[in-house]
Length: 405
Image 1 (cartoon, rainbow, N blue to C red):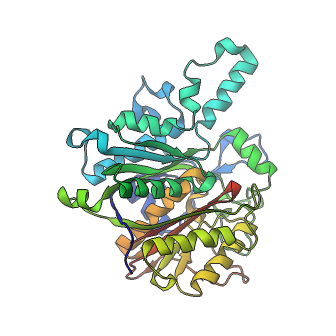
Image 2 (tube, rainbow, N blue to C red):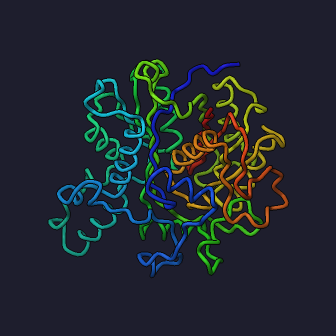
Image 3 (cartoon, rainbow, N blue to C red):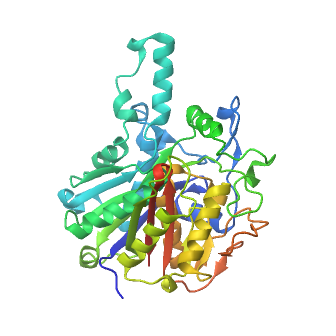
């Protein structure tokens, strides 16, 4: 069987808690190094740990005149997209901007701006908020700023499917290429949700890890002792092209997006369907779209949030669809949960796993949950791998699965 349509991945960019740049992020994740740390900006909150991007300098990204005009999520997006464009060997002057699209997935948009400007209004009055408040916090402005940055005049879309947003964006970008609406699409996900309100809200839901004195031990997907996720920030961007466009310009193809499936649980605003029916639907749809069977998949980068319920439900779905076949890991053990960016970052890690022949481990997976029967990757595993799947699930029951080859 063959995929109905394959989008060529010709460029990748990462800005994650594991490092700024693809090599930095990948090397740290393969080593299983946790990026979690005490966060001084969360000092007065019930949970004070996070995974932030180390050494991120907004001024270096956009310059001193623009840094106060953008939210952090927009600057993370630009930083990752620039890497992806450079990696693809593209530049604005060498493409038809009308044939270049942008699709960005984000769960929160400019949350830091919204919080700070609300505080300014509450303390000093409406006349003291920034005139740029709306373009800084509106959820579509990461995609809008990228289009301006890149001169991309093709379709400009924002998708928000909570923690599935980054994966959904890549799937939608592939559909744009398949439809003929663009030749090149810059796609991915970004979120900068390590803010007091966001962290306090997740803490009230009891979704965050709280029991580990050492923050580096807190994110532990599929481990018997997991107790919640560690919130993180970051961005992952890819350059997708039609195979014909990539071939015509002699581009290096780092991988292909060959399948995409999406679904809704239609069950609960935050909890997954206990039977995982929606997740299973997305996974099976992605396989059909890829023209593949479960036995074709070598590796699954799981959503694997380190919460009791999500990991158990996802494991049961993987068992039902794949049996004991593919190896499974969650890179959230190393970099935490980057929310709307997670699906894109993890799709990139999946491409890198196939490219390098190395499966990244699940950091902190010390005592695998005995009720989870999967081939869990506890330390980096070498081999020849051809096909990977990346799973992403979000609040509202949003599910997305990507097949990469």
